[in-house]
Amino acid sequence: MATADLDYGDPRGSAELRRVIAGYLRRVRAAATNPEQVIVSTGFAQGVSLVLRALAQAGARCVAFEDPGYGNAETDETVRAAAAAGLRVVHVPVDDLGLDVAALEASGAQVVVVTPAHQSPTGVVLAAGRRQALVDWAARRDAFVIEDDYDSEFRYDREPVGVLQGLAPDRVFTIGTTSKALAPAVRLGWVLAPPALPDAVAAEKLISDRGSSTLDQLALAALIRSGRYDRHLRRMRVIYAQRRARLIDALARHAPGTRLTGLAAGFHAVAHLRPTADEQAVVAAARERRVGLYGISDYRADGTDGPPQLVIGFGNVGERAIEPGIAAVADLLR
Image 1 (tube, rainbow, N blue to C red):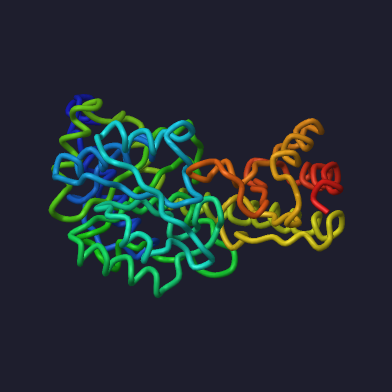
Image 2 (cartoon, one colour):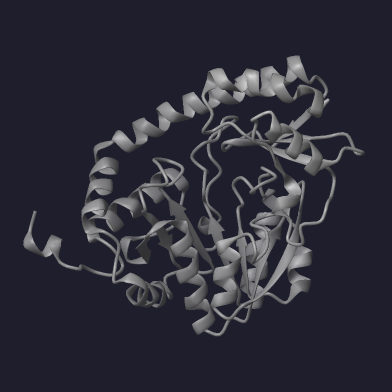
């Protein structure tokens, strides 16, 4: 290791890691990129904060978030980061095809944060027509899309959906993180910026912390370059698919008729309760039985009730714990 590797380094991140990430995103996510467009961040939260601040400096005044999505400024740090950057926050509805682009058009936003590959929390994939409409909106409005690519590698029904950035490299920021692929404790992520804006994002990174840990960056670069990162993802995809299958099977046996959606990718499913169910009462009763469920109203901007639905996670639950957990709350789901 050269002495220069132990200096503060480039605030954009290690040149080696940026080169490796650019290659990885081209190969795995069908991104249009080069290392000069990559800025290493300390996870997703910092990445989106850097981008929002850079866009606010460039003149953006309003940012839109999906609804349901991150929630509101009281419950989510991403929405708080937008407010801290001086941006007005609006929320745009999501339906079975993903973000409602017509509602986005009417909102007056110049920036939108989306989860197109696996919407959080509904799990829907942004439909092809909506993807094109979204990038058309960005071009027409001189606007920008911030793409949260948070669990796209874990897809079970087909090959992963390519990044939105590949359709409009000059209008889309893609933000990725190692939190889901490795562990939240690995505080590294990346911002793939449009060609005209990496310097603006890097300037915000310099102000924030002068740069992420160089040693951690070099370790991640070696992991990806060696092929072990890809092998780890393949192994974990099998494990998560087994947990997913166990969840589907347990619900079919203990709470037949419970409709599940959002299972094509990621680490959670959405269970649809009967229309008269009290979502929050079900969540509270489940927790009394030591089972963690989450009401989808927690992800709505105003916290109000909609159709009663539950977010059921399986990513960090051992396979053997899934069935007894579902059995314990089956009467609440039926």
